[in-house]
Structures are given as structure tokens and as C-alpha cells.
Image 1 (tube, one colour):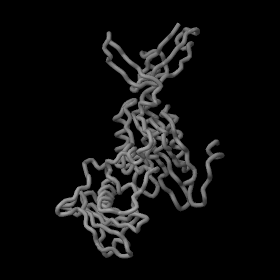
Image 2: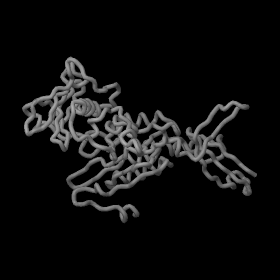
Image 3: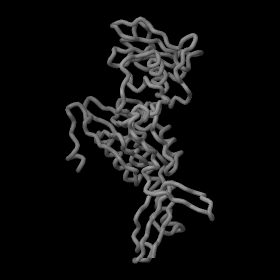
Image 4: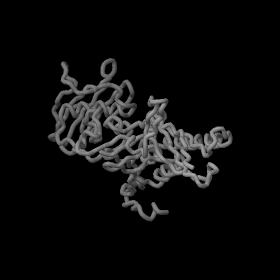
Length: 354
């Protein structure tokens, strides 16, 4: 109800102006999936602004940002290069003070499993105007490999490009160079199947991988040899009209195309479409480096405290953790002060002061 009253409606084409700014450490996966589902269904975009952070279930909500309209639909999720976005594996929250309570453990497990199934179903929803899913399987895999505060951070051009997140807050190149054309070809071909996975740093080579070609309409244009070129054809033509970057080409080893597929110097204007501006950067470029004046603390800095375990004088564990208040009555000591510390793994340590 609040969202319906506060967010702008369609401007006649789409709900692109309906956006929610996110800044949260996360929380309940169940509630996060509900919010995410609502964003996706209603066509609400998501934004993480400079200095803001979105982690855990908040990150799932962010990935469901879309815009919808009668004629136009598209993913609508924007990350400032000085913002932070991190994923980790959901953990079971046992609503009991007894770790040997089988019924409580079983109920918590069932809730966690159902929430995970709801997440997978939502993530596999078809992205607008695409044969791809809203949240690709390799991002889900990366999320499940990181536990607690060990966040999988979206912090490079490679990651935002692969997972179709729109970065903002950086200076865009004004001229198309050989280096820009090289990266645009390699990334736009590779990102359709996976992260780059190898070092593709631009270097001058003999014979060259990038050649300037004659271009109609006063455009700058380059012919680029793809990484997999050899036994199969792989490559692109990348051009610019000084406002947008365009490309067309194909990698036969993966059957991936950009634009309308293979092209040459005679037909690339008709065969190409405009590419994402971020594709002209080295994919290993960190987002933070594109905004050098901004401070981007890591996810551990959002923790409430640090939990330390000592064995004698030896420190055997030292991790960031969160503090939660607990009703004293739950431990049978109504006059006690009870504090609960939640570790990155999801484990809990309860301190009772009586």
C-alpha cells in the first residue's frame, strides 16, 4: 500500500521512474524474497547510491529491480561505483534457546528450504526481452559458496557486466580507442556465457588483434579478433558515432552473437546495435577506482561488534558479528540482561547478565 502511494506510476511507456533506494545489511530471507517478488511483479527499479550498502537478503531484493510497460520492459537495477553490493549463503535461524530442540530445528530447516526454493524460482524468472534469467545461475552459485560475513562482493566491471547491473557515477570515455574496441568485443561476447575467467588485458601484438577500418558516416571503427578465434571464427566490428558505441560479431565456439551477428566493413552499420558503455573498460577494473574520491569500506565494517574466542591467551577466532536484543523471559530470568551475538556463520552466542 505504501509503495503504491509513494512511487510514481508509469510515464506512459514504463515504470522506469519507480525506484527504491536500498541500504541494508539484510535480514530474513523469507521477507527479503517477498519484497523481491513484489519489486519484480510491480515493475519497481532498485538503486544503491554512493556510500550505501546492500547485503544478504537486500542483495536479492536489488537483483529483482525491473521496469515494466505496455511496450517496453527492461532490467532496472543501478549500482553507484561507490556503493557496495554483497551476497552470501542464507543460514538457518533456530527460534529456540535449546540447540537440541529437534522440532525447532526441523521447523527452521523447513522454512529455510522453502525460502531457498522461492528464491530459486524467482531468480529463474525470465529477464525482460531476453532468453536469460533475472538472476543467472553462476551468481546463485557464487552466493551459496560464501558464508556469513564472507561476502561475495560485486566490485568489478566484469561482475556488473556479466550480471547485467548498471553502474553509475563514473566518467564515460569520450573517444573510442583501439583499447576500448578490444575490450568491448571481448566482454560483450564473453559476458553472455560467463565471467571473463582469464586475463584479457590489452597489449599491442604482432599481428595486431585490433585494426582500424574504413567506416561510413564519419564513424570511428575497428575490426577486433575474438579470444577464441582460431579453429572457429570469433570477432567483432566495434564503432562509435561519438555518442554511443556500437558492435556486431559472433563467436562460433559458443554460438554467441552481438548485434545481428557476423558483419564486415560494408554492412556493420546495419548489423550493429549500441553496446553498454561499461564494456569498453578492462573487465578487471574495480568499481571503486572509477570514483577515486569516494570511501568504500568493506562489508565487515557494517558489523555491530567483533566476536573473539580465546583459548588461554591464544586468539583462536576473531570475526565481525551483529548484536541482537533478547527478551529476558526467554531464558527464565526476568531480571536479567540478555544479549545475543550473531556470528558470520549464523551461529549465536548468548550473554546473560544477572
